[in-house]
Image (cartoon, rainbow, N blue to C red):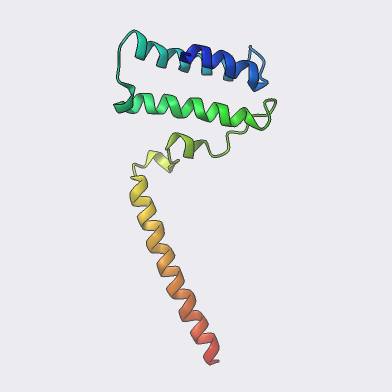
Length: 121
């Protein structure tokens, strides 16, 4: 079936009320993707904007999967591929991962040095 049929199926199985803002946004995102494919004839595979729409749909579905009455958006930044930064800092996620890895290596070295000092005492 198409994306709008999929949305209707998800809505009926999700446990959410039809008036829920989550249902409304899920429907809107599904419509956007449906129109992009059927009317605009876009190849969605190569578009970052549609990647974000797919991720948002998955985020909503995951958020309500455990408890529709109290959806949890914990981990949303991972779903969306967005890292929260203070003061709108622009830092590449791959660079942040590299820095974290280097800091971890340094911490391991410091820990081993401390253990060596303690064993001598």
